[in-house]
Image (tube, rainbow, N blue to C red; front, top):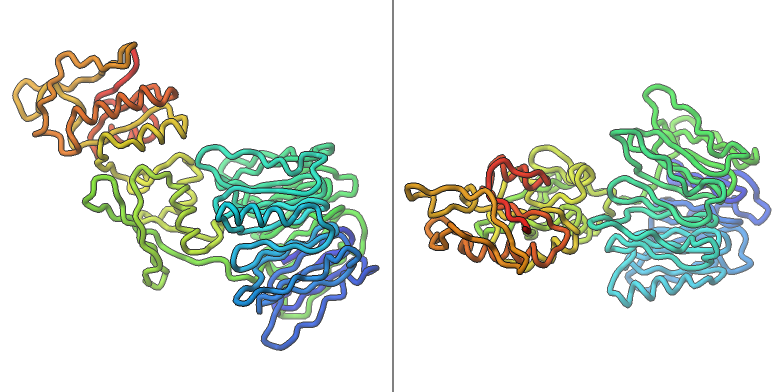
Length: 502
């Protein structure tokens, strides 16, 4: 792992030791010795004039400038440990194993974040200390910030429906956040364009973000790094990669940038020579990323239960061991289910690689279609109980343009389809009074409807049109048909019954 600070850089080696280069005026590069042979450093963070390090025994240590108490690491409660550390300008933020955030150093309201999350019965999953502000990522995928807000660096951008944040980075006077769809957003000071995030090339997305003093560095899914913002010292001039090489971690310092390559080497560039003079390594050693064991490989298997709208989700390890089992409705948003599984397993969302039965990654499906539902993941239609209140609420919450009811017939008929002369009704209108125009449609259709009755289904569809203004059409289609696939992906189905407002 590499961390670029104000005037120094700290790096994590493959043998569990940490090294540093750059200014040592306050002792920030004088890394404390490890207490025993069985303990290693697992994470490093370089701040203004101090360094904070996390050890494999769950304790944290600090060195360097301590005028505000930023190196006075708070003692741990019984049965807790530290899981992440972040060094800011004159303060330090630490995440405990119980999801609580603790701080030390210059106080800018940092403790309010922990208290607020606790009051909401939420835990934190990541922390980031900036020059004078702090940002934390909550277990529900939302982010909070506090401290100096003169440049609106604490005004976290609101999330779109079905979105969540998966990483946060606090810089000098700006904040950068990575969304679950691979897009990055920023807020705060933008004098030098540090908040103007470059768009990704087609087929790529961002996997990591880092905020410096006046610049931003981002890692893409193809292993390339990009930067934006102040570049007077060349801190945004990303070195080209040799063929077959990629970047695996990025860190934006106050006036320089450090990047970890896939071959275990680190390149640094920007203002100052000493902070960019990466220590050479002995043969057989390399620099590594975060050594904390965050990842956990699981396979997601979806089984359809005989309960109309319920799936059983079972997570298996690659060794075949059952890890988790839970129920999900076919209408549940896939991203929400993804986050729910990560929360249940206590795994960071970016580290959770859920493989679907067809070999696709759940994250890839969700990234391609943020509004995908669990039913989409099975590649088949399912029957849904009509009359459920959730349909109206979901459409209203999502601002959906269409709603889909799937059943065991092609749509609404003039009479039971098994009877001679039965005809499919292609369209039913809702009049200005909110009543369905059902001329020519028989309600005596129990024999061909096993999902709650045609009348109840049509009333639920009408409720969607009445209660969700954004919905332009409601489709009733056969489960597992091409029409169902078209409707579930937002297209007007070629066969079925469409309900619209007159």
